[in-house]
Length: 85
Image 1: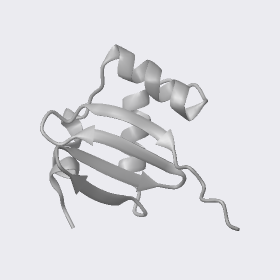
Image 2 (image 1 turned 30 degrees about the horizontal axis):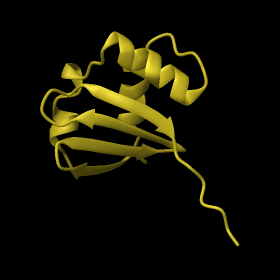
Image 3 (image 1 turned 135 degrees about the vertical axis):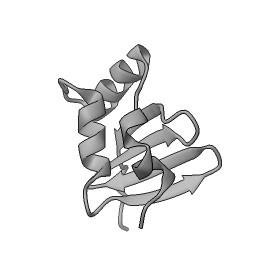
């Protein structure tokens, strides 16, 4: 199923501060943050959710957040694991 984020993948970008924030949140250095996010988004296991003005892409243990209108990657971070009692 095609969605706006996939259809505009070439428009995906981030800011300089966004790149720093993403690398900090992921706790590892990525040579090309945009390329890493594109590869994750293109994964067949990626789950897309649009809430308000943002797209949320869940893949592996990560969540990528991108603005639905400007296609700016806001952040990417590891999902928090739910603790079982």
